[in-house]
Amino acid sequence: MDRLPDYVAARPRAGATAAVPPAAEPPVRRRTLTGAMVAMLPWAIIAGLLWAGLFVKPQPVGSTVQPPLLEQRDHFYGLALAADKVWVAGSNGKILALGADGGIERFTTPTERTLQDIAVWDASHAVAVGNDGVIVFTADGGRTWTAAAEVPRSQVANKLNRVRVADGGVAVATGEMGALLMSRDHGRTWARLRDEEDVAWNDVALLGAGRIRVVGEFGRILTSEDDGASWNEIAAPVPSSLMAVAFRDADVGVAVGLEGVVLVTRDSGRTWHEADVGARDHLFDIAWDAAGGRWIGAGALGRWVTADAEAARWTSGRLDDRDLSWHTRVVPAGGLAWFAGANVGRWDGERWTPVGR
Image (cartoon, rainbow, N blue to C red; front, side, top):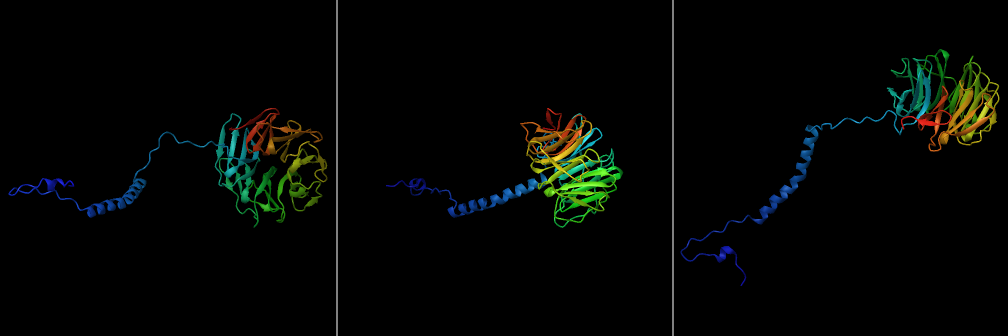
């Protein structure tokens, strides 16, 4: 016989008071309550999270970590000497002042556009140019920077590649779509020197007495003797793009470009001849080192080039075999040379010392 439930097996004899089994909760009702609780659980969690987000304020633990002023991801395309400091301009509108003691100061600028170049007139005045036609200037030694208004623009492209300055607040900026812009008031206002055209002008040299020399894509070279009122185009001795130009004096100058091209002029840019530097890495900048009596250039893969004062004998090498960074600017400074590009550093002719690395 199957086992009976306890309350049946314990049934009392006749005349005794029957024990009433405890009432069992109906199974259907129990399942209904359990389902309701499960259904409400996600909403309870969401409500708790909303309450925490609105009313619970996290408290900081420890100190806030500030990113370094000179970050690994920064690229600096412009470089200039300002009194006893080196100013660099580059990514995200960043302009830094690097001190001889290793100190770094960041200036506040009104743009986050990448700055391609920077130039300094004196202890108070400087100007920087960059992507999308941005131009910023300072009149108080970098403490405040202002964006130039109504800069001439193209409907196609407006990156400004380089800016050069001269006495009297004169500046000339070069860039895409034939941009040749001049300012005569320390960078506050700008006007076109030539009509827009489909070429990028990469650099300009201001020789004084109204003489301007310009280099750009496809080996193109322009000269002006009247502050840009009229222009003469020089027959290109090379087809590759020229990236930079500098002059030792009114007559002797050097232009450098892609594929290791080096051009030399000794008649103020009217004629040019190609020099062999023994390397084919791209060259992006050239500078005359008056104190050292030499030319020095910078390029891709850590490449440097140097030459004597007449730009007749050229040598080349790498800043450091372990650091093959590209550099778009080089500025001589008291026996050293500062380079800026994928990183920033100084070179004494033997040792390469990156800053902030």
